[in-house]
Length: 150
Picture 1: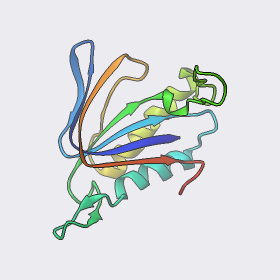
Picture 2: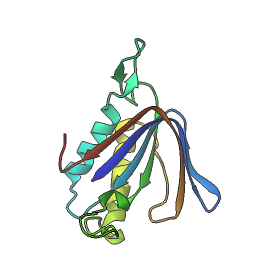
Picture 3: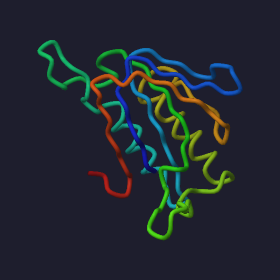
């Protein structure tokens, strides 16, 4: 799994003019799934996201997690995170899982994330044409890949 995590003051995802998911202070997580992703990858990424200390404490230092600050999470599927631009100018998405594999893994990730956070997680809609709006706080943007686990 590959994710782009943005600390936000607010974020929303709109589909066909209707807001599908919206949060206040928290994390916007763009996530892509590949065939090789395992339950262990899902569990690691969900746990890491919930405990990632990127929110300021009372001294202004990034010592708090989204869970510590009572924040929310919005998850949006984005297969383009697996774009390969090695050849030519048209990206290849061969590493991204096909929908029949990706959807169950994406849904399991959202469920795991909600369990770890202790409350529902807002989402977009897998495969839909979505408009994502956000107010990046900081800005703080982090990338994570379950293959690298850095």
